[in-house]
Length: 487
Image 1: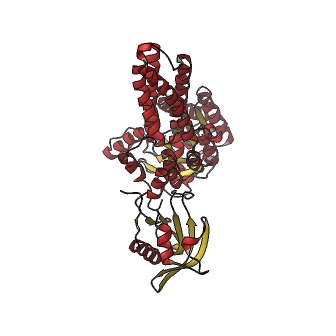
Image 2 (image 1 turned 180 degrees about the horizontal axis):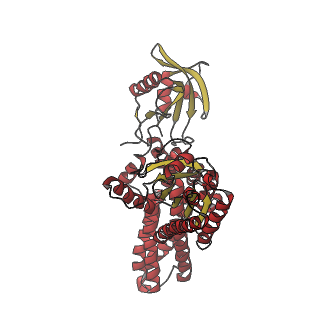
Image 3 (image 1 turned 90 degrees about the vertical axis):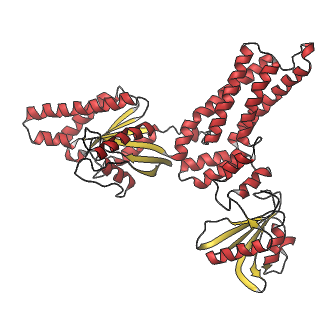
């Protein structure tokens, strides 16, 4: 594909709307626009200054297609770095297509997915990681994912990588120079300063790699598995969180036989809730598959919410005398704690929220006893929280939302620290760190400069892959194919 011709595409979503924006970019964009645009002032569009807007009509010969605003941006001060014209027309799909077809007949071609941003990258208006952040910004659906995309678009991540690459490149050049004077046994690269740089690069790479765990969940939403025995109110809780009847609620145990997922935003952070099949022994093959999938979802979840039916304890007390009910309640509570302990032991690194559901059936005495029993568990497990809740009435649902937010590490986001969210960047950072570790091992072993240079070149290659200083058509094709047409 050539990138010196003139392209056109609809820059706003397709379909009817109040207005639509049709974008042209390339060396002939202003000429093409001038041929089809007649200003109400009588001025020629190709004679106007950059960053100006003009009212006029799009005409196909003597036929007027629409009254539009034409915005002119002259190179290099445009989004793509080329001459750009944008027509703001009325949002009729018929009008949009008529104008685009007219531009095509006048010498433009249809833009491919992401081609405007690709041209911005090729023309040095942004590096590759910033270009990728454009797609993330368009796709952002929460305050956190939006902030992450904005940070990357501003070039904070790129600047950090470029600085490291530049420092490493300087030392690489000195080591390469030593090879030209190998017979004279001279050192141009100060080994002490080089060691300091390698240590610094290692620390920065590890920090960026570690940030991916946070960045990935903030960008894609934090998966939360809602688990527990059948009929304890998991589906009711999901509906209460979503504020809609998303999951089927029934008194029949085993109603949920597959996982149900939906996402909401809490405090600017996306959470992806997964309502799972109830955990119990069953001979039902289908229900058994659902329970098997429950444990798979717990593996994938970032946070586990464990529900149990506190209302059962009230039923126990009302159906037995005082002494019997106390014994049965304690046995019931012990059984719940055993199940909670199993979950905690199986997934020790996952934050756990223990919810006593259906507490609207309990009196104050029972609530106090339940709180005391759960506190004994949470006091010895710093990554566990417990709360009383009624999914049916909504009591405690807001407290649960705040509890979930407490588990999310947003400190780096609040402090505007660099956070890696892109899998391609993460992979390149891992490979760069691997090469830097080889360099460190080479220094420790006293390897010669020619051997050190091999690993340094590889590390520089992976740094360059992130920002696009080293790229190929296949890589660019894969990245920009995920963009929308018109961007």
